[in-house]
Amino acid sequence: MPLKPSKFALEEEISVSGKVLRVVGRLQLEDADGQPLTRYQLAEPSGAAQILEERAAGFALLRQFSSAAQPVAAGSTVTVMGEKYTLAKVSKLKVLGVEGRPPGGAPNAPLVLSGAFQGSMGALLREMAPGAAAQSFFSLKPLQAEEVLSGAQRGALAEAERLAAEQRAQAEAESGEEDGAGSSPLKKAVGWIVTILVVVGLAYACSGSDEESWGSARSSFSRGSSGGK
Image (cartoon, rainbow, N blue to C red; front, side, top):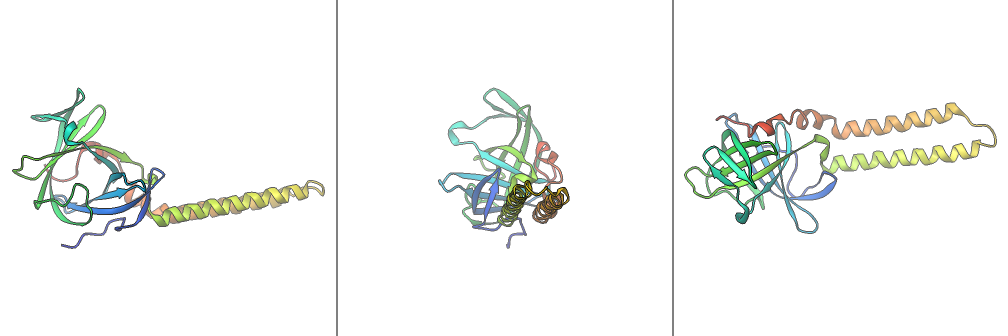
């Protein structure tokens, strides 16, 4: 089954919290409402990997617990280093497909049961295939919309910064030349207005639509995975 549209493509370079990473794999799931949930396997130049999750409410970083440091699950609670997390929601997610090197490898079952747990330190996910003994645990860190940028957004922001720097340098040079002949406040004001308009225009062009789509609300991450109980 073909994957549904998502923000980032395979092999695309993106920025997460100021760090440039490359998309090396994708896993796409679908909740009970038919909404896609895409997980990206991201690689740093050093080879270190991260998992970025995209859903309608925004983005979050997932950190998978190693098999040697699995949380302790008992009934509707999960304990990590003495901190208890309580089950908030259970979602049944349908596997739509994978590309490249997906996070955790390709699922060997068509469905994933995802339990969202809440604690004073944040949120955890506990996932498994129905009827399977193996399970995976993830910590979840929501991200602001401006912390996750595509390559095009990074380029637009860099161009805005370059133009602003050129305008500042030009204004400073003109100010030095005019010191002896009398400065022109009006000319300086016009220059700074142009700088502000350029920066605002480029920033809006690269992030305006994404703010609406990806930065709507982070509360769903604290409540758990979207989908039916």
